[in-house]
Amino acid sequence: MNERIQEYQEKMQKTIDHLTVEYQTIRAGRANPHVLDKVKVDYYGTPTPVQQVGNISIPEPRMIQIQPWEKNLLKDIEKAIQMSDIGINPTNDGQVIRLIFPELTEERRKELVKDVKKKGEADKVALRNIRRDGNEAFKKLAKSDISEDEIKQLEDELQKLTDKFVKIVDDMIEEKSKEILTV
Image 1 (cartoon, rainbow, N blue to C red):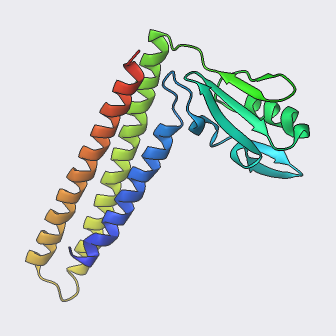
Image 2 (image 1 turned 90 degrees about the vertical axis):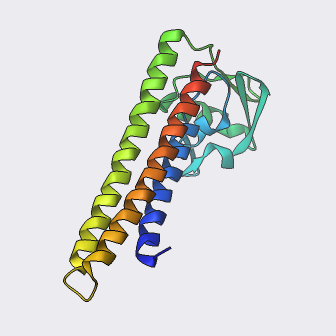
C-alpha cells in the first residue's frame, strides 16, 4: 500500500475505533460496565474514573455492583452517577452501590437504534471528509513531479479504502441495532 494512502487509512481506523467506544456506552438492556466509562468521581480533588476507585462487578444480567475501595467514597460515587447521563438511580446500602437496569421498552429500543444510526452516519461523514482531504492533498501533488495517472490511481485507492470503512460502519450499525432490538 502506498504510504500516502496509509496516512488516510490510519485516520479512518481511528474513526472506527471512536465509533466502537461510542457504541460500548449505549446500553442494550443488559448491564454493561462500559456505561460507567465517562463517569468521574471527585477523588481528593481529582476527577477520577469510577473503575479506578472501586471494584465493578455484574452479579446479575441487569445489575452493576460497585464496591469502593474506600467506604467514604460511597456518597461521591453515588452523586457522580446521579449527575451523569446514564439515566439510572444508584442504590446505596452502606457497603456497595447497585445500578439496576430496567427492561427497555419497545419505544426506548427504537430511540436507541435511531441514536446508533445517527452516530454511525456521523462517522460515515467523517470518513468521507477524510477522503475529501486526501483527494485535495493528491491534487496539490499534481503541481509537483507526479503524473495525472498516479494521482488518479491514488484517488481510486482512497475511494476503495473509504468504501471498505463505510461498509465496516454499516456492519457495526446493523450489529448494534440487532443487539438493542433483541429482547
